[in-house]
Each structure stands twice: as C-alpha cells, then as structure tokens.
Amino acid sequence: MATDASSQYRPVPPPPDFHPEISLSQSPTHDGLHFWQFMIAGSIAGTVEHMAMFPLDTLKTRMQALGTSCPVQPFGVRQALGSILKLEGPSGLYRGIAAMGLGAGPAHAVYFSVYELSKQILSRGDPNNSMAHAASGVVATVTSDAVFTPMDMVKQRLQLKSSPYKGVADCVRRVVKEEGIGAFYASYRTTVIMNAPFTAVHFATYEAAKRELMEVSPDTVDDGRLVVHATAGAVSGALAAAVTTPLDVVKTQLQCQGVCGCDKFSSSSMGDVIERIVKKDGYRGLMRGWIPRTLFHAPAAAICWSTYEASKSFFQRLNSG
Image (tube, rainbow, N blue to C red):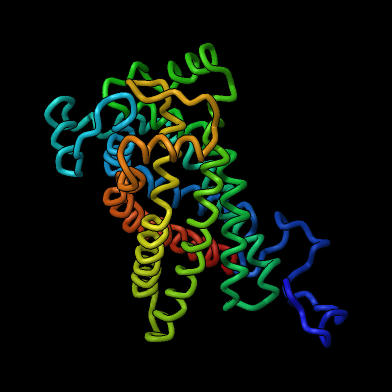
C-alpha cells in the first residue's frame, strides 16, 4: 500500500474497540458479538441461501457441463428445466442437495467469521473503508473454499444427468478409490481465483449499497433494515455472479471431468480448460449458465445477507439483555 512521506513512519493507532490480547471468544467484537456468534449466524445464512436456491444451481451445472465430449447444442434455461422435469421429475432438481447441506453450513461459518474478524482488523475503525471490505472478503473466501470445495465437487457430480453415483457417501467412496483424494481439490485453485474477485465485488458493492440505502432512509426500523440488506445483497450478488461466470464454467469442467461424458483433463490448468472450451464452443461457451447463475446469486445473496443480519440482531439483543 502506497504511503506519503509524512505518514510513512507515523504509527497508526488501533481502533478503540480492538484488543488483541483478549480472546475473541470471550470479548465481543466491533458489532457487539462473540466470534462463535458470527459463525452461527453465517452458518444459518449460508445453509438457508443455498438450500432455497438449489434448483437454479442444478440448472447452471447442467448447462455448463455440456459441450465437452458430446456435440455442442444450444441449451438455455427453459430447455434445461424442461429436460429435467420431463426425464427425472422435480426430484431431479434436488440431486446433490445433501452434499450442499453438509458443506454450506461449515463453509459459511468460516466465511462470515473470518470476514468479520478481517474487517475489524483491516478497517481500523473506519466503517466506510471499501478496500478493507473487499480485502476481508478475499481472505474469507480463500479460507472457506478450503472447507467447501470437496462437497461442492460431490454436489456437482450428483447434479449431472445420469450421474453414476447413488448419493454423497457413494460418490466420496468411489472418488477416493478411483481418483484419489486430490480429485476433491482439482478445482480449488480455479475456485479461489474465481471467488476472490467475486467476493471482492460482492462485499464492496454490498457495503456501499447498504450504506447508500441507509442514508436515504436513516430512520429505518428493523423490517426496513431487512429490506435494505436484501436489496443490497441482491445487487451485489447479481453483479459479482455475472462478472465471474467464465471462471465458474472452468470450475464446473474440472469438477465434473470424466463423469457422464465430460472431458478428462491431464492437469488442473485453467488455460488448458479455457482453450478447449473456446475451441469447441467459442467464447460464448465461457458464459454458459450465466442466466441461472445470476438468477441464483441475486436472490441467494438477498436471502443470505438478510438472514445473516437478522441472526446478528438476535445475538446483539441477547448479549445486551
């Protein structure tokens, strides 16, 4: 970070509410919550978000997994939905939801607690520091992706048409036996590279949008605040999702490789995957599934943020009482 000469050697005092010598599990943080309360609030928010929007996630996976070993065909949201409902029924939209449930809770607990801790440290008492919000989001996503990536891979393989796996346990057992533990993290680097800008855009946009909305209506009561959180979350989620769709396509290809006709890659190189997608489907192939991805993340982020903030409010009232 660049600094001018006058401030280069000037010590920056910590914010008055930052006490590194006190355990976060014992002392409330900047929002008046304990570290474990951020984890619970994040876990609830992430689970509700992903479970509620799971059918759209299935549509996205189906659209992105096409165009590998089979001829490329135009495939939109309506075609994908119609195909699943006709051949598999409504239950086909929920294949893999157990893997999502097992992964989303712990991953979001890590995600939000690390975000809040990083925001407290990096913002240094400035609630309007967008760079601190973005950087905190990146730190949070790198950490949480290490928790979520294995279950995300299992989830996507179960979502595929004619998936050969009977369920989560069967998928995990067969992947370990046939491909090794490393297969669960084949897409980790791509996931981090995708989620770092996604989270930076998401968190910075969310905090900025929330701040602007609160300034428009500063006297908003609890119900109105939930609307603010939901609106800011929807805007930030949709923008971040659209921008990072090409990397999400690469992630899907790596996680589903060798299953149900999907191509097998000799390495986890993003460049090799992108080159093959472009060669087979053109640059439009990198945007496959952007509509259901955006439709997923806009309401999902609205649900997630409003649930998270509501959970925080509950704990704040509990602590103050």
